[in-house]
Length: 312
Image (cartoon, rainbow, N blue to C red; front, side, top):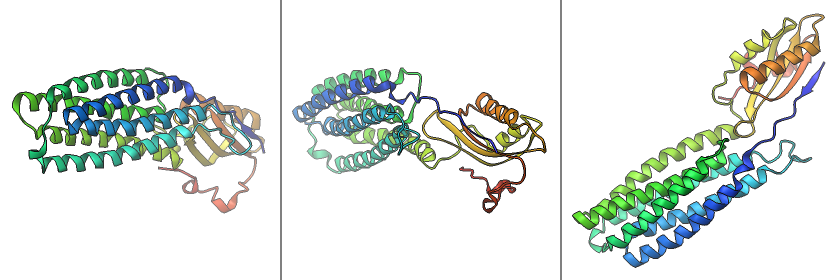
C-alpha cells in the first residue's frame, strides 16, 4: 500500500487585510456623518442607514480578523491552518445581514403607519446621502479589485453593497420628498432595497454553509472524477471511497482508495492520479490509498460506490 499526501497550496485569503482595514475606517467615518446628518435633518432613513453601517463596521472588523487568521500557519492542533476562518466570517456576515433586513422591514412598516410624524429636511438628507454613495462606491471598488474572490471578502462586499443601495434609496427618497412631497417614498424604497440585500445574503449563506458541510465544490461531479481516475492509468482497476471537499474558496481536496490490477505499478498509478486531479479538476491536495488486493475497510462498503462519501 502506498500513501501520498500532497502539500496544500498556501491560501491567499489574507491578501486583502489593508483593503478591509481601509474599508472599516471609511465606514466608521461615514457612520458618524450619517448619524449626525440624520439627527440634524430628522431623517429616519439616514439614521437607519447609520445603524446599517454600524453593523457593517463590525462585519468589516470581523472580515479583517478572519483575513489575519488565515495567514497563520498550520500547527499541531489545526493541520490545515486557519483558512476556513474566511468561510466562518462569510457565514456570520450573511446571518447578520438577514437580521438587519428584518430590522429594516420592521422600521419601514412602522414609518408607513406613522407618516404624519415625519418632518424631514430633504436638502441635508440629500447631501449626506450623496456623500455616502461616493464613499461606499470607493469602498466597494477597493474590495472588488483583487484576484482571489474568497467568501470572507464576499461577505464584506455584501455589507458594503447594502450600504451603497441604502445610499441610492436615500437619495431617491430625498428627491421625492423634496420635490413631490411623497414622504411614503422613504419606507417603500427601504423595503425594495431590503429585498435585494436579502437575495445576496441567501446566496452567501448557501455558498458558505455548503463549504462548512464539506460539500463537493461547485462544478465537480464525483462520478466523472471516478471515471477519469479509473482511466488515468492501465494499472488502476477501480476507484472507491472518493471524498471531495474544500477547506476554503479555491482550496479543493480529495481522498480516495485506488485498487490496482495484479502486478500494477503503484508509483506510476499514483502519479497518474495526482496529475489527473490537478490538471483536469484543479484539486491540489490529494491523499491516496493504494490497494493491491481487496479493500481492507470493509465496514464502509468499499466495493459499493453508493457508500462513498459524497456531499450534495
